[in-house]
Image (cartoon, rainbow, N blue to C red; front, side, top):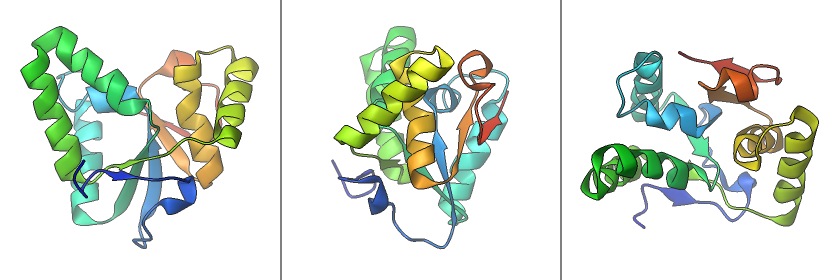
Length: 149
């Protein structure tokens, strides 16, 4: 892994860039390579990352979810290019610890969603920031969500 995609051993490892921090759900990452409602908003987040006005943090499951969609739709070589773009963009991939797992399971139970869908809001709560999602069904009732698409 190059230094562009940073791995955090704890969510407190988010680089201090003086920028707004947002946690992204995989539903946003998919919009970077699929032209669908919300794609422009998702791409604008990457532009803001490049401009240094936002730090984008993703849960550890994010790359796996997004790359699986890329591989199934477009093939493994496309999925590798998507991973390279994540790497070049400078996304921060959050680490996992027991308390984050516990928080994720609590979110899943409270909202009746999958553990995958609970990972993003649990991480955002840990970091004290908003999260961005295009999944209204899973995240529409949650606090601190910014829905796109």
